[in-house]
Image (cartoon, rainbow, N blue to C red):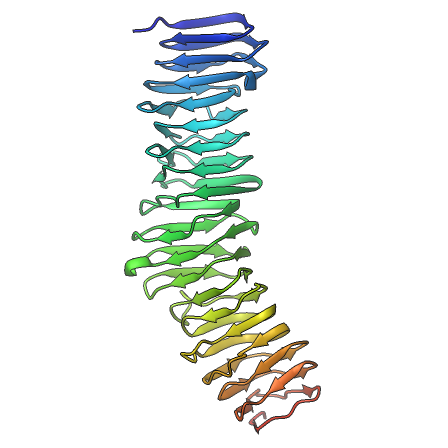
Length: 388
């Protein structure tokens, strides 16, 4: 095999070094561009001067243990590398063409992260929490697998950072996302697949929960999130949210999959340029807000809407005059835009209209146990008041 390299103090102006084990306990100084190719273990405990001038290329089935930042790191095709004792910081870019395992350690990458086709990044929380922190774009053309989530496994953006390419292989495990602009459609299609949000800065394209009727979970907790694609939940999926979901895409479909606690929303804001069309009945415990130039459409299936409050500040609600029954357990407010009524609207709070209300020959029922206030110019078709 190749000879080992052991360093106590080395200055390299340029060129390349090939070795078996690479051990640097002193100062390794790069005055130019340098590549180290190691087929053995890599142990670095000294100082890497100008680390981004250096590319560390690993070719074996070995470990890396670096207590100081390394420069550019490349895990070559056929290599299988585990992070060993210390958390690993990559000051430059990370390219994975083989298999790389975080081994219950933290991995921080300042430059871009690229997982090539056929390559694998295993995020492993077997014996301790493991966080992948990215300060630039991560492009996944291979596989990012949640290997074990006995302890928390996280992907964290240093500032909101893009995760693009192929969806995570959740592998029946859980991952926490923080400050991530997640471009692939989320597909939680194995029993136990779970996404947990770590803050209110995550952005998604599409989200599908309980795919193929499996018991999977999207847990936003109290955090807000935004999505530009479709949202789909099924009977066996679980959606947890006490924050706000913002639908901000072109044409989107919202299929909640039910109206129980595993399928309802706390707050929804629609700001997208295209219609937000329902694919099932919708239950919003807090406020449902239409604030877009487009439409909030119950669809040709005339799905029912239940909401704590219904607020229209722009665009239209039910522009196609769908039928059905809406139950508003608090206030209905039209600040601007047009609301076209379904067959029945039941309101338990106040009614305020400074926009346009089209009664569509339907009925409005006020059923508050105390009193309701109607303000603004409104023409009703059938009006019933059962307040005390």
